[in-house]
Image (tube, rainbow, N blue to C red; front, side, top):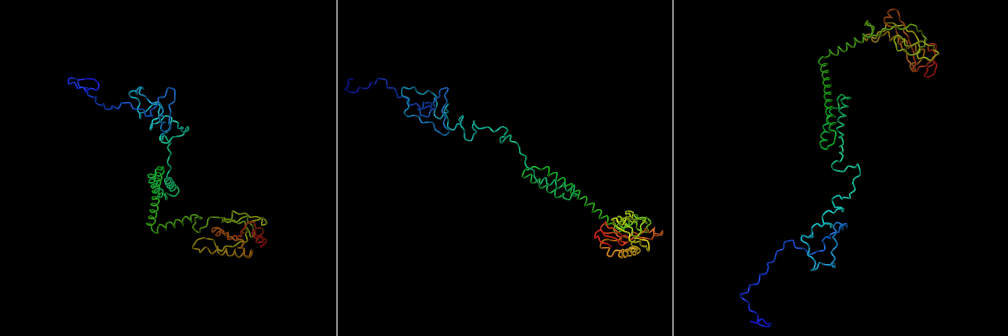
Length: 370
């Protein structure tokens, strides 16, 4: 056996120890260092501001000509920052950045609301809903109907109140109290109206059950009351009066007399403007009575006709500018011997002058002489 170069191959020694077996491959544990990719964050020295990038922008790519770690460099430390983990001083994609506005969220630099303004949402002042107009109409209709119309519009106010409650339940408006008040007042008005109707029906039924005797009693009471207004004797229907006797034909009077006894007028000089004049004295053929059985008293009619003819003779067509009045004595005075009545002419317009009996009358309306 030779060990010289170029000699035959050595023969293995059967007694030599065998070569050690190759080591089995170790599976990765996840903590192996990762080669640099150029996106790693660079630690910023104390006192310097870390760089920031706009949202969505990628950091600058690594310089391919920069110095690469060589074989002699120290390997990265265990548990070094890995790509995708948050790094202090570097922006993280999808994470909020301090000082940069975020989409959908208010930024820290947002302008605050002015002093005194109320934000929307919780704490916002409550706005009162509007009042339902039909509820107010119900209350007004029911109240006015009860006070001024005897409850006649009560059904209308009641219906408006019920309709207002239904509408409030749907639209959420205010006015429920007005509607309830309108319903209550309307119901009271209806009850009051029913009470009035019931009273009227009762009175009509009472009159109908009495028959014709009820109306006879009413007529009798009216006649008795009318007769009690006279002198009480029942012989006539005239009030008790005493006709004055100080007047004569041609006496001018200040005004037209509205009283039976002519006490509300006074004699005046005919040259002074006046309203009436005694144009004649008429002798009565009998006492005056307004009893319906006397066919309106023929004695009064006879005296009136005589007064008309007398005035027509003094003032032709006197009725175109005036009229006449007959003042007669009371029936008791006639029975005592007073039978003269006054025939008095008065103009349509006050202020005539002169005397009709003397033929010097001038009317105030036309200014013509008689």
